[in-house]
Length: 297
Image (cartoon, rainbow, N blue to C red):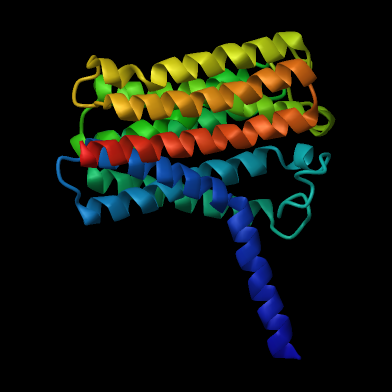
C-alpha cells in the first residue's frame, strides 16, 4: 500500500514540476534554439548543442515558474489554469520560487559556458518575460508586443551560440519569429477570450473578437510570410535560402494565411484554434526547411 502511495506521490511531483516549468513549451523553444544553432554553426559541436538545449530549457522553465508565481491568484480564476500546481495548492510559492531561481542560475551559467553573449540574451529574455510582459498582460494589449520580444529570442539565440556574434543573420531569425507570434497569440487570445476575461487579461489588439482584430491577424501573417522568405534574396549575409526552399516556405505561409482569412470570415473560436494549430505547424516546418536547405544546398 505504501509503495503505491509513494509511486502516486512521485508521479504527482514530477507532473507538477513539468507543469510549473511548462515542459512542452520549453521543448518547442529548445527546438527553435537548436534550429538557429544548426543554421549558424560552420561545424556542429555536440557539446555546445547539449549545453544550448539544457540552457534553453532552464531559461524557459525559470520564466514560466516566475510567471505562475506572479499570476497565481489570476490563474485560480480561469478554467485553463486553475489546476496548476500553485493555485491548486499542490506546490507552495516558496518551492516554485526555489525552482525559478535555480533554473535562472543554471540557465545563465550553462549558456555562459557557450559564450557570454548567449547568456546575456537568455537573461534579457527572462527579465522581459517576467518583469515586463507578465505585469502588462492585465493592463494593455501591447503586452503581446512586449512578449513577442523574449518569444523571438530562442531562434536567434542558437545562431549567437554558434557564432558568438549578433548581425543581420540572427536579426532576421529574430524577425521571423517576432512577427509570427502576433497571429499565433492573437489566435490563442481569441479562442480563450472568455477564460482570459475572467483573469482580466487583455490579449487581443482591439480588446474584442471583431473584424479589427481579424484584420490585424491577417496583416501580421502577411508580414511573417514576407520576412520568412527574405534570405532568398541574398541580403542576409550567411543566412541563405534556396529558391526551392523559399517557395516551400511561401506555400506554408499561404496555408497559415488561409486559416487567418477563415477566421476573418467566420470569427469563431473554432476558426481561431485552427489558426493557432496552423501557426505552430508553420513555424516548426519553416525551421526544418531552413535547416535541411542549409545542409543540402
